[in-house]
Length: 470
Image (cartoon, rainbow, N blue to C red; front, side, top):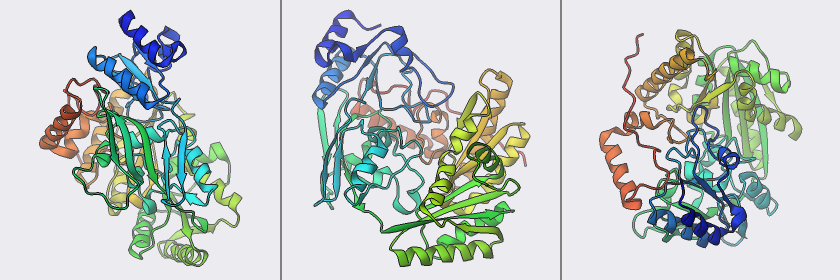
């Protein structure tokens, strides 16, 4: 419960219309895109400027009020659920592209800018911002930075952290921090910019970002390869990279996902195959043509039953849309969709997918797998019903085994979704107890009172390691 005097101070900062505390208003900010997590905040504040954010944080700090920064809440780790109640700081009104600097090839934006809107704005000037998370039509740049979001173009171009060169952020006590700049080189002290990227709103509130841009590629082409055997598809992925070809996109869908997506988009995907690889390359026309031809040759050598190159931009867009719609298609089937992101070295792709299939069979679950084959980032997606408590227990055991195998294969518990609440129990599996202690030390240095996004990353109840019976 927020003290009435504190509420009045917040109203004086942002205006009465931008302080919400009615029950029906609070419900809308009690959950995000992660299933099974929900808690009501006590109040929601929607600031317009950095100065307003700083003033709000000072009040929260003085009164020990938990604060959860929030954008479009498309994250899949429970990162914006207000576990401790308190104040949700919704940054959607801070939605301006402040500058596109064509001399320095940068864009400076507020955190509430929608990812796709930034893409469109810079591409209109012949420039290119590569990070493209699946939720790009609604996700915000601030959220992308907080989660270090990836996307379909991550194989060739990297992820969000590779494009953030400067930040403005408000610390838990209300102080304003500036990091980085429009610089090609900067090694002045610890890299605080990189530290804040992927910190999931636990260290500071990002209020402005300067992003690196690239020249817009001259052309791009898209290709679909179809395989009867999963191992053949995995070998093709490894061989493409071994041939020193780094495509923009190298995506994977298993049989279960193919069928669900085809039911949804109806573009003629084959239903009786084990795997599809979707590839896209960009660059100069001659280079793109050579790479597409070579990738097609490699796929045929690895027993692809069909290789189709899109002949028009419309065909290419259809194929890419089919992949981007995978989650939406799957979510139609059952009330609860649990989308995870086990990530392994690309050489371990086939063993990982086989493990997921075997685990699904063992626990009698429907798990469909798709993802970024080129960088080993898989999205095993369990279709279930939260009301079926027995099945949910089996789901938990299944993902315990999936993540145990992921670690065994040299992988990680999350490649792009973040830890949040959902993966907090697994974090020690990846970083060890010493890693946890170092991270807690960093958290305490930034946030000694522990008010910023409490309950995320760390847990008092870590998951127990499992012994997988072969």
